[in-house]
Length: 146
Image 1: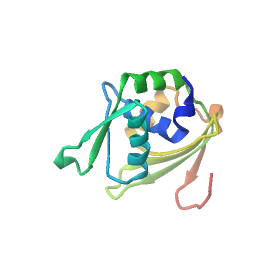
Image 2: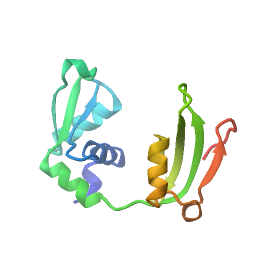
Image 3: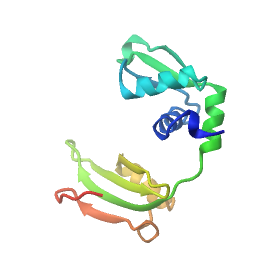
């Protein structure tokens, strides 16, 4: 399978769509970047589109076809962080949270927020190792770009 039929952004949406146990859906609103990217995937046979339930707040729900699922499987390879920064902070409920900025071995940047339970679980499983990935814990009050 060649990724020439879809770009890296579309591939990331496809991976997110099937990223959980028995998950195969992605909700979005009309005219967004995500919606336009998925409409192109629908036209190429990688996804289907249906109207979202009214209580979702989205206009459309996209799902991958077998062709789309197979394309994701063929394109998946484990990415490893070559650098990441962790920022510990407290949310409005005074709960410990972490902001993660990472550069992966393919050059992609990833940014996400996780709760303290997810962080502790990842650390126990060896997914967060300071020496292995140039991890740097930084203070949220200090400004600094990745």
